[in-house]
Image 1 (spheres, rainbow, N blue to C red):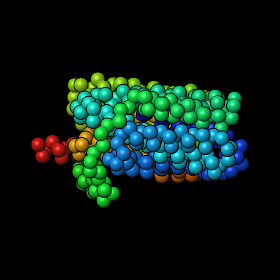
Image 2 (cartoon, rainbow, N blue to C red):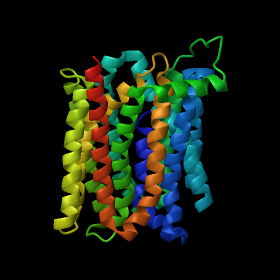
Image 3 (cartoon, one colour):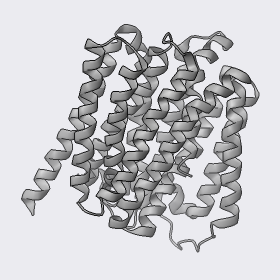
Image 4 (cartoon, helix red, strand yellow):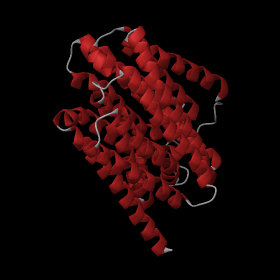
Length: 379
């Protein structure tokens, strides 16, 4: 379930400049296929908690995976901008349910402490998806055309839907279902909780670093030697670093607290962000100067994200799906906004992209440290 989103998002990335050329439209319009996906993912995660409260886990999963699969078909079949964008919206809404429930089910099933260790395995699954998706997407685009890219996600959605029907049991529904007003009230309780606010905001800022890089790198590297194939191979370094960080987090969380794990991850990420910025100032533009420092950023993110997410999701007991959904909404809404404007920043001054990444990472570290110190003093 967790792998469906990163594959759907990153399969299309290397093909964006090619799609704009084939459809004869401005690149900002094609960029909407990425930004609208993230926006739909954000809105879907905001709604998923209320849907689960009304339908239960199994029906909600079926609804989400059906929307994801139909969106894949629509985006790939018709070959025009309108169907592409509508299909991506359907993909995003369905994918929101998949990623939210993957995290919520883990926290519900394992508990806060064990979930922080096991969340790293979800991070590893996402990292594997991110590593193979751009490479596969670039290969499919070069040999078969961009429309065929969507059939890879279509097969994944059908498989997940089939396994949901077969393996996920139908649990007894609650006799009383929360009203719309009560669901809004639950979101309000989460936003009032200082733990949820701090961990979610820090996690969101670190994620923005990744979204800014991902949405800018295809345009920054468009004239680099090696073309779209080289981009796919270099992108693997980002994903391997993320996967390694996710695995390391499962080991670190067995020995230290969630906050110490987050501090370790953030410290590594801010060093990578600084090296990325300095590299653009003093080195020639190259894949190595771009991707190696960013790999350090994502390695640190792989360490900190499982603990950040576990701490945020467990802020209010028995409402894991609501917390996971709201956290995902805030993170992806920010990602959608930044990713849509990033190409404009690139055309204006590429250096601003790297300044923005460093600033977001520094602010994330400050917010977490401030919250941690306040918590320690109160104890």
